Length: 240
Image (cartoon, rainbow, N blue to C red; front, top):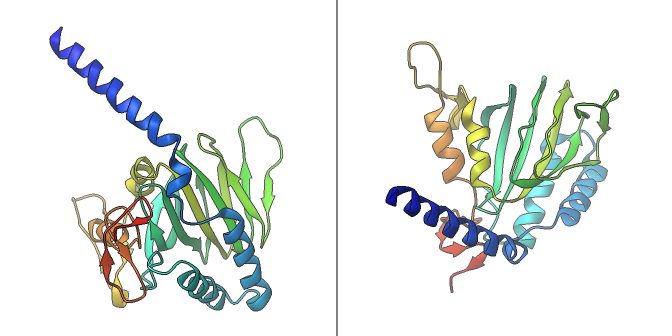
């Protein structure tokens, strides 16, 4: 009985803290969805389907407008989540936000998952289809459009052929990691080498998981700026 009472008190305390923080989340956000959408459209207008140039355009402009919060060390890793496989480059990650370039040169399809953050998915090249249970026609998101999935929503989505997007999530990010890495199988490391951990019948990308979290340009544990040096920041507010 005492154990149950103690656990109830702990849960109540955690819930109170989460409620208090939830009401102040806006103070911790660094990026703005409208800003990112406008920047993406400018990059597309300047470079069209040259995705390499589009990504460079976005990253360089963000590094100027948000110094010390943008990871300019580009490393791509494969990621499997919800049955969909793609590659991602993490531009920024913290407990309240992440910003990545995600996509596939071959196309992919899967389950979105149900998350604790709003997700803004701006198509840099190609097209994304999405579908909610109960609908009879898909939603279509062509190049330059933004697909907003509010927290708690769930959909099936697909990207036919070559499709790349700038994905920005804001809210509670840590719970999303379990979904994001649960199906991961392998990843291409620096220099193109693949790193595997074989359990006898499947692969899990331990090295890729570590790299993805460490190199996130995030402000939860440390921020990676253009120099690659880390500084201590909390919730997007620099320490000193």
